[in-house]
Image (cartoon, rainbow, N blue to C red; front, top):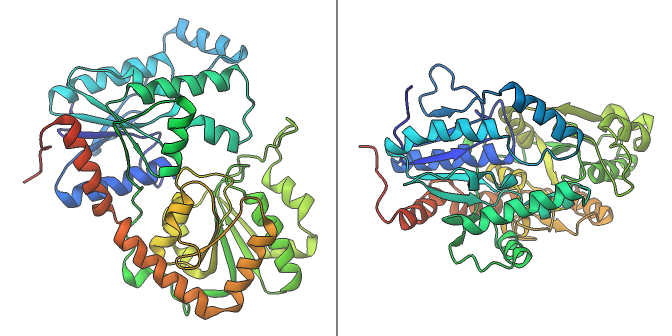
Length: 408
């Protein structure tokens, strides 16, 4: 078995980004680019087999026994299928052990289900990255506060407490984690997510954008607020016969507090968008990152309507592109966007305020250009991969207590 020789590894739910476009994978792709620029090699750990040519991938494909398969089915029927399955944990340990002997020193992983707490090996430092603690994201998604919810929250708290270090993309989420679990977390550090490096000639320009096109990038679910964007579009499009909305993201279904079956995006559109306006609403579904970048360049306004975000990668990606952005002032988004300087913020679920901000940008090209220029400058100063990677590397070396090997 070929083991990548690198001091740092990141667990990701899928790889590469083009096949698994979500916030965790976007973050890892960007921070690894920063490490590479610093001359520090890194690997990814993926719950699948490594493919030919993937020298920097540790693949862990679980081998289920018959009893384990039967047990998994029974747990699912009983509503007890919380956490990563034992076969995956077993295979991850098998793959990580020789990597540690070969020089792996730090494993970084999201807090989900407290999985990293089960990946303990001598010589391996474990870092929990707060991508979306369930007591925050679960509520934003409308999760039922049942046994499965409380078990997952407890597992995540245990992993956070026992980690060698904790990093958070925002002060907001770190403060909430400390308060919820009543933990001091002296080993915690706020390190923002890095964003994609966008060349200057591929950044947004007023001249290159379509004056009547809006874009929303995100899943259709309660968390990301796509339903609020559609409601805002209906109001704006009723007044402007040329306005269009591009909705780019997978359909996960919109749940609500009633506990009924989630509504699909098509069902929501049929219910809330008048027939005459539907031709001006493009539903793209899953969209490749390269196409998303193109859509941001083409659109006059990018919209982020999340009900909560630990950070907000879609907002950061808009900043990287230098796009005029209207976003909810929640969670980590408030630490990315400076209201009236790098974007316009509105209170969560306030469709009236969202509509007003979009109208301002559509009607004032000078304001749109000014915000876009400031957004890109802020990104270059704070969120470039090399900037974030250097801060992250300093923390890793602190917990390892020795400089990590640099490729010569």
